Every structure is written in structure tokens, then in C-alpha cells.
Length: 354
Image (tube, rainbow, N blue to C red; front, side, top):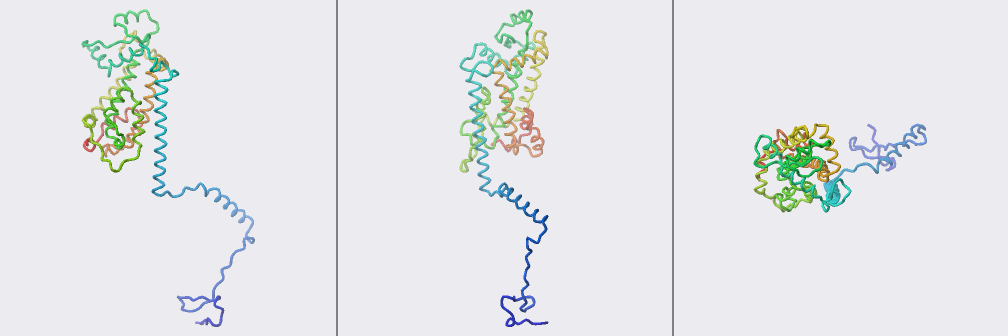
């Protein structure tokens, strides 16, 4: 093998090759002259550089843990702002302003008060059911479908004979009891909410007020539960009411789901007397009722908001469901009422009664 002496060549022209244990001449790396490239190659190179310069600013950078926390905080702040704005619109539009259908709370008419009393006495359709089977210890009140005022049963029957525009009180009763039964089923869901400790008040009172004023109190809870978690605070123990609701969640789900179903049937088939009208008349009355009464108009708002809050809460508390049943509960959560019934029927009571 020919040995190259470092003395015979310039130091910059040789390098030590450890594998060959000898000085070897350096090889020069030739660079291609861009001008020698073909025009097509140069054009493609320029276009690729321009494309990279446009795309690079929009490329998503890998997020660290701190970046994720910041984005999560911003998302929660945005949702809280939307919820508080919804609460303001809900109260101002439905309670105070005169522009929505019906009367605002400061100008409520005696007719509306009578209607509320009548619907409350027919709570869960208990009195109408007893009356229909011959039990008359308390007579179920009848609101006249047209005048919306209380009338004695005999006078109401006589009025029906001379009225050509009889619609259905059952539509109002069905809508009222549908929303109230749905509100009842929210109780076990709230008492098993994983973020309920961020609400500093009493969940018992919150749900009790929700039974009367529905989303007036549920919207603020949905906003408050998005507050930052206090790591030093221990999870609160369930109250007696909360423990009863959680232990009896399957029963609450059955009762609430059954009342919701019966309310829909009652709205179109209840009191099937000729003077109360058929499905066509009751459907016409439903649209006129929604467009003329503030109470019915507010129930539509409640149904829409409940349809949003139900899957939201179930999704964040799906771990409370029995593991084998979590899959289909997760699928049914988007169906109003039905998803909540499935959640309550499959709630793991033993893990949540604490």
C-alpha cells in the first residue's frame, strides 16, 4: 500500500483516516451550479420556496402542557361568557320586555295567573287521571281553551255547545308537564355532576328553584361549574335530598320518562270528548298558543336549552354510568329526554352515593 507522507503535501490537502491509519488526500465536494440546472427544475424550485413561505406561518406548532392549559382556559372563558349572555337574554327577553308573545312579568294578567294555577293543580296529570277513573275528591280544574279562564265544569260544557272555535287545553297541560318532568330528571344528573363542587351554593335549593323557573337557575349553574377547580377543597358530601335522588335515579328516570310520554299523548288525545277537538284542532291551537302566551313561548326556550345542556352534562359525567352500558348511553345522550332516561337507568349508584 502506498503511504502518503504529510511532509510531501500541503496540510490542508490531506486528512487522517483512522480506519486506514494513514494520511489520505481530501476529496473536494463539487457544488452544482444553479445556472447549469434546467429551466424546468429552476421553476419548480422557485414555486416550492414560495409555497413554503406561504404555508409556514399557518403551520401548527406542537403545543406544550402550558399552551394546552392556556387554550383550555380561553375556551372555558368563552363558554362562560356565552352562558352569562344567554342568562341575561333569557331574563330580559322572557320576563321584562314586552316584545315577546304574551305579557311580561310586570304586566301579567289575571288570566295568565289563573292559567298557571290550573296547570299547577294538574301537575303530572294526577287529578285528571283520578277524575277519569271516577275519583273526585278534588276536581281537576278546566281552563277554557279559548278564553283561558276558569269556568265551572257545567258552564264549560254549555259553552262548548255554542262555540265554533274550541281548541285543546290538553296541549297546554301536555307541554307544561313535559317540561316539568324533564326538569325532575335533571336532579340526579346535577347531584352526580363531577364539577358540582365549584358551585358554592346549595344544590337542593338550585334544583327546587329550577322546578319553578327552569333555566333561570340552570344557566348560571352551567356557567359557574366552568370555574377553575380548587385543588385544596375536598369534594362535598351529598345532602339527604341528593342521596335520595342518586339512590333512586332509576325510579326518577322511569317516572320522568313515563310522564313525558304521557304528556305528549295527553296533548293530542287527552279528554277525548268531541268538544275538545281532534288532532287538527289541537295542532292549530298549539301554534296559536305558542304565539300568544308568554308561558308557552318560554317553554320552547326551555326545551331548546335542555336539549343542549343534557348531552353536555352526560358527556362530562359518562364515567358515572356502569361501564358495560356507557357506550349506548353516550349514543343516546343527544336525544332529548331519552338520553337522560338512559343515563339515570344505568347510573352506577354505588360509586356516586358519597
